Length: 172
Image 1 (tube, one colour):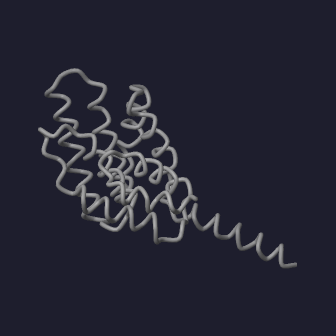
Image 2 (cartoon, rainbow, N blue to C red; image 1 turned 180 degrees about the vertical axis):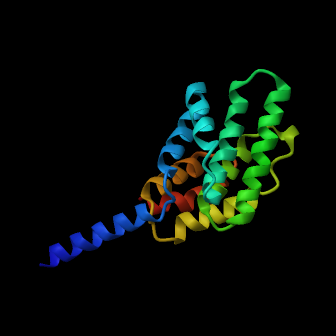
């Protein structure tokens, strides 16, 4: 009997974690992680996000899609156009939903990798702090996202060793 109760609780927690995500985020997340070095995935992400803006998280992925296109175009003007468009939309999504850790993770990843001459690094400390706190103190509803963010933060050169040690302590 006790095993059944535990199984039911586990299933409800797992289903609740999936329900907490806006519809359609998992495919966008997958395309995002493939799009850095893959022009086809970047174009698919860009196309998939053009008509979907139901939540700030969807807007965030639409912004990321534009930013990822920078890696796959040659013309510097076009690169800057994609970047600035994505940057504005990503910042607007975070203003609309400042406590969504996935949006902060997306912006942190962009700011860590954006060339310094673009000057897009002003929220790194704030985003890093929110992300590390989320990873270390919140109950995990979306284990897939948690693992993706953990993997990035534990290897990112912009994350201090003290934060990396806190993260590694969670998985010992």
